[in-house]
Image 1 (cartoon, rainbow, N blue to C red):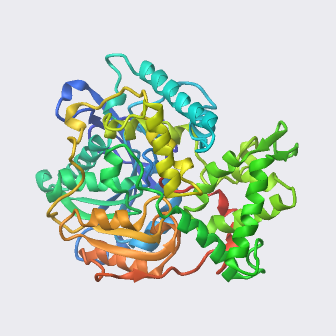
Image 2: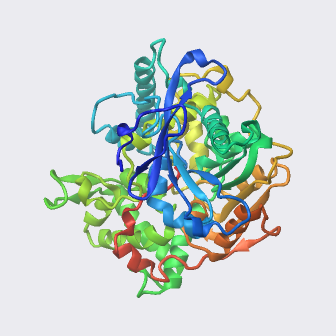
Image 3: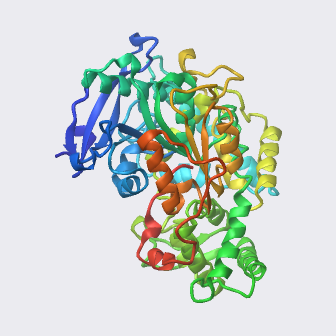
Length: 537
């Protein structure tokens, strides 16, 4: 039994070893470039939960379903360890679930760090590069633009040597790794590797990975669920401008859900949603004009302040999972209204010791470092904001898309400024070519919430239309992907799809089992579920 991939011996074949209590792991050696094997190899980490024999009630043998949580940069290994009960509940227990760390992520090579061997760099990624600018404050705009330029030049120098392998961490390469996995699996079963099929479940950026695979290998699909769908055209163009068009609707739902739940369930309750919204703005306007002081030795090592930019940076994450985070947010805002900033400080992580944080997304440098490398390699220089005026216009586009969180989303495209690392031509989608396929060997199932703060329903409709025969399942909920809340209806549709490729009827809309602030979500928040990680970005 091992609990560290560093203890595994890499191998070009599967070498499954018991790991992490209830799983098996393997560290698979793969070519950096399948079209140029002389480029060398890297290692990709896989972890598998194997269906018990008693659960294999279908006529076919259990399939390996590869999963990806998003990012780019999300760890499929951590995802499976933490979310296995969800997969069994939503997808059934008759198949095997396989998490993997895509290239450059967590336990997989190549190394993408710009600061190898250094600790504490998550502050640089989260608070300096990711801190939102103020579209009306030229000082914050030029600071973010300059920081991104310095970051790009620094990283480009770190990875500028002729033998740097960072350029091989990209979506096309990872999609090919998934195909390679299916071929090795088929071979291990004595089947024809050239006819192997991928079974896959991807969320957020994982939908880019899935649709890219389906575009490159349309005849190699066994099952494919893509949930919380990214606009592939916008992503590969490097713009990240199609994401937050429904974010303000998600914010409005906070006021509505709070009111509907009643004063006993929502601590920020008022007589109407608009009254709650006014109360919210009064609190936030005060924070904008007067940062909140945190002078609590039990929480932090030094006195600190929480600014509106700190708050805005983490506020976006609360929209990912309203069931869990809306109640916590309401508690924090109520405390802030009376002058107590400690709850919001624990929520934003500003100056707070890590063990005292209740961050919605417990991100670390390990999670954040791969994002610019993978996303910028995929964009391939198509949208570089090296012109300052072009950057300001980009921020304005996003701020107009979402008054509440548009600015907080603007750093994603800016990351590519000066990051001069390009994938080999064999791993780049040509300009004007975006994920699509007129026909696939099995129909894809697209899934979306009605209101998703970062992957709107319109993106799911657009991408589903690009794949012949695909289905679309809509969950009538707010949050990022259908995984943001429980729905027996959604679970049933997913289980049927994996069992026999049955798509839900056209225009199917699934209801969630509960609503934020209701059905025990306050109790769940109090039990500490606010510390769970989120998928995607």
